[in-house]
Image 1 (cartoon, each protein chain N blue to C red):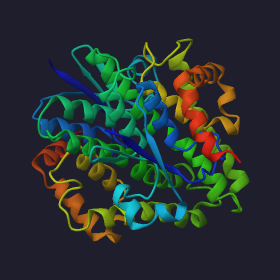
Image 2: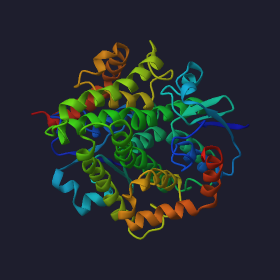
Image 3: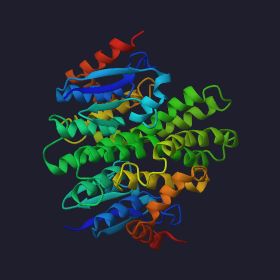
Image 4: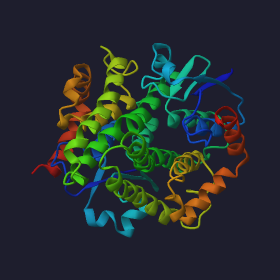
Length: 212
Length: 212
């Protein structure tokens, strides 16, 4: 059965790989699954046809064999559960890998998203400059704890898993701000993720569409 | 094997059930699984013993048979996967229920958390009053789309699932602001969740500890 995902017709990041289709592409590449991409314009994302697939009018979505999913976390988990290479076989290790997926999305990504909101939705407000250090501080607080946990380990819990795929994807979004560089072990962890051939293929595929 | 979760020694909400142990208690009650609770002070949450279980120094954690998990999403999913009553048997419906869990945590909860940050961490800042409508507007935007999707359905995707458990838990956090009341079908949906006997037991159990 063929897999179809959706992605931005033109990603706002100009091909830096920070849109959420990249993490789904990465998971599909790790799993060795071919896929097709349907590009969606910002206007089409808010129209009934796309809202039927994604109630919040975002990308990515995932279609396969009559199943239609949204939310990058759910899609990556679905891929990981059905194919090898992204979740350990041992049930305890598997539950811990899923924990790291949720930690990436629920604990680490929200303060990083707040930085985007502060920049792009509130960047012209009178409080923008004074508020920025508070927003950055909340990211640093989380990255500091993640950095202490990771220490000099290669991955978060033994072998590379969907938990690492999601955490690296989320941390990449903090890199343009320079905040990631303040945590050398996390920067190296992200670089290990990026060095994986599957990530390289996913990055190149989105870049071919989005690069200026 | 006995299950032990952690919860606040004294929840900041004074027993309103908005701390994240409530959603785990609710899942355990739906699954019919007894559990013990270890209460943790704010100081102890930042100490090495607790950080070994929860790298971000939060609650809840979940221990069972040598397995230690954190992140309410991961814990609820783990419970749902191992016991009946929280995930449908059909594989497509199951994947959609998991999608709603991620949607609750990644798409709906972050703007609601921003309201808490605006109130409790930035409430004394000069921009607090002027910024509040923007923060509330971002919540309304998400709830509006969720409300359109739900329509007059009872639950998000057919039968009650862990996706509803998580969405109701997240929406409850928007109720004190009055924003939820602007969406009568979502308010009724939350009330249906609260009316479940399992939720009632979970709520009462946390209230017994936290009520003033």
